[in-house]
Image (tube, rainbow, N blue to C red; front, side, top):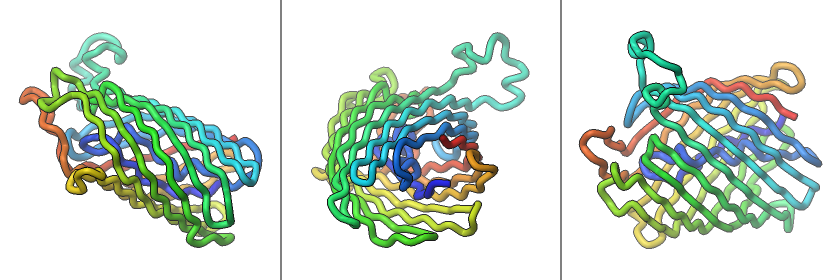
Length: 270
């Protein structure tokens, strides 16, 4: 079972649902590894809703070079059970498909010592829940190993990140096209409690370099239990904060500063 060092990854207005946890996808095993993950979550904050999410990734590690490719898609609905009973048509109809989001991420790192790994990364995403039509990021920076042992590890990372966001101009009252240069920093730790149980936590911050008052935070904690050689199940809890969520039209849910989610996860590893 791989180490789960669950990352907080923020970078979009309101909360950064358009960004995913990168730390938990890293592997210390040599060669090619990967996973398929299914999540069911209850969201709290801007709108209380249910989210179903599928995520897959591949990770290459030859002892020096590290490559991560990741894709994620989510379906979110704010309908209650009574709404569902009264609604007509297919669950794929627009009245049911309230919000959708998707993400792709590519990352490369090269070890230059036992404790230092420079990395470069890029990504693209969209998120109807946050009224984001498209979001692009590129960045680079070092990752430091603070501690490493048989039962746990701790890491620190910091990087420069450029982001471009295109918001829905019919909803967001501000300029729909925004560019920012941000400092992207995190600290993560993981601990193997037993041969089958692991827990991890990450705190992440992304202040804008031109305006540090514009910042995003996230705390993410996840515990998993191995079920056989290839399966894991677990619980993930996250809290996210955006200091400057954009103003939106009155007939749409206001984006709040604080949001959170509790998720049940099922993972197949290969």
